[in-house]
Image 1: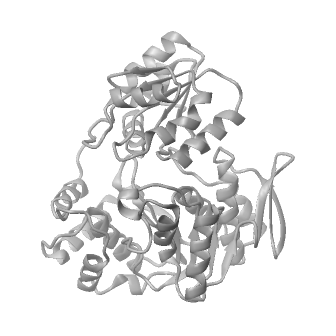
Image 2: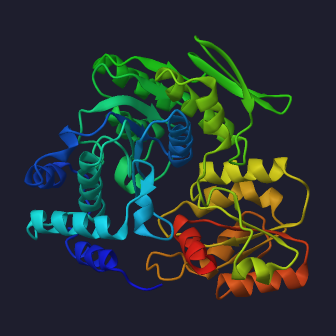
Length: 424
């Protein structure tokens, strides 16, 4: 892929990263002040935190709001193929010219001070959002919530906390309660908060934080309910019942994500047409995405090729549910993970659904788990496992063994991004 001007600026920004990663908002507020505090003039913000489901929930909310004729900014991370995916201005991905200009402005305003890549690029997104008219701003937390770089604005109209589980322990804490405390840090005084399905330990922390902040909660299982019946999605809250198509994003977990999105849309008085658009028109790549074109698909022949970027135990469970509910077909995994992830927890629920796993190292990632270690972890949970030099050679081996296989490339958003870049 040809390097763009924005790529060059982003590389310069990487050099500003502090030697030790510490979660703090001090650097963020310093830079925002130098930029004349764009976070104070954003369109009303819907702020999303959680361990899993943030991106899918955001995508559904955006689809619903846009079907209502609203202009919506959206910020998400990480990107898959191009950085531009992180910043959507009033419905459109930021252009190369606009991105280059905004990154340059933020780099100059930072004055060479230490700052993380995520902090300075989040500041760039907020600056871009402040300058383009829109009706809503969707902000997805990067890490945690309380000290996340997105948690710098008082323009919050609604907070959403999707399911919380164990991940990023080195930054957020070792227990579910500690991690939930970080996620609950997005709750603002008096601002309503929608809460997705939670384990009791997480919900107790979220409820306690909301009580301290005087923030009304709309909790799954208490204030809203969602499920499927007769091949339809049924959502119910105090406003009544919605009978909708099941989400176009595949997997039983997307029904729960849809529930949070629908609760948000109902909070903003969106009609049933908008709610139906939320579940039928959302697009979120690398979440059980069927690949249908490109060099890898051609290489796969008659085999099905799927892609998912989930990378923690909860994601492994969600993928296992999708595989268990789908049509029976020999299933093979091509898996690459980062060395910071709980690979055993991720793979354990998948073991019952995979004929074999082919392990790869993630290309270009210094923090990749070596293929040999991924294969060893797979064997430890009962999978037949092989090592491969790359995804293409793994795919060749699978197709040679079973031309009618279902092949899932999985384990990391970074691996998913590499696949989308190469297969685009």
